[in-house]
Length: 296
Image (cartoon, rainbow, N blue to C red; front, side):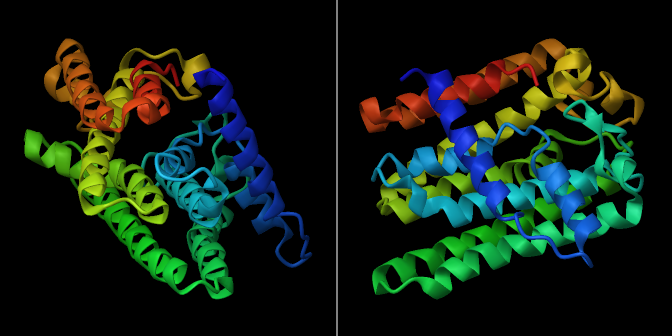
C-alpha cells in the first residue's frame, strides 16, 4: 500500500468513527449538534489522529486501541478552529472552502459548539478509561490522559499569546513559543500519546518528542507560507489574510525565502531523528514530507 492510499484509509476510518458519535438526535440540542458535526466533518486532513495511529504502529499493530484519544484530539482541534475563526479572534469567513461555523450558524451557536467539542473530547476518553479492566492499560491511559489535558492547556496559551501579540514585532523565541503551543502542542501530544499507549521506552519517547516538535513547527511555517502564496481554491481561505491583519508569522518576520529554508531545516531534523526506527518509520517520514509539500 502506498502512502496516499494509507492516508486515505486512515482518513476514511476517522470520518466513519466521528460520524458514529453524532448518530443520536436530541430535539433540544439539534442545532448545537449540527454545528459541531458541521465543523468536524468539513474536510480536515486528520493529521493529528493519523500521527497518533502511525506512532502507535511503531510498536503494535492494533492501532484501533488509540481511537478514543485520536477522536478526542480531533474534536479539540476542530473546537480550536471554530473559536479561532470567530470575529473576536481572526474573523474568518471561510474554512476548507466553506463558510466558517459562526457564518453558517451564528456566533453564539459557534461559541458553544466549540465549547461542547472541547468538553466532549473528555467524555470520549474517560468513558473508555472507565470501561478498561486491565490494570497496566489503565495506568498507560491515565498517563496519556495527562498528556491530552496538557496539550489543551498549551494550545490555549499559544492562542492567547497570538491574540495579545497581534501587530507586535516578535523575536524568534517569542514566535516559536507561540506556535510550539498554539499549533505544535496538539501535534506533539498526538505523537507522545501514540508512543505511550504503544509502550515506548523513555528513550524512544524522547526521539519521538523531538520528531513531533519539529513537524509541529513545520506545520505552522507551512501554514504561514500558504497564507502568503497559497491557492485559495485549495486552502479554502483568502491568501494574504495574515499580512492584512498584521499578524506575526514566519513569512512576515523573515520573508518568504527564509521561511521556506526554515521549513526545510525543521523537516530535515524531524526525518533524521525518526530514522532510528528503520523501515517502520517509512509512513512517518512520508507524513513529514506531506506536511512540507501540502497545498492546503
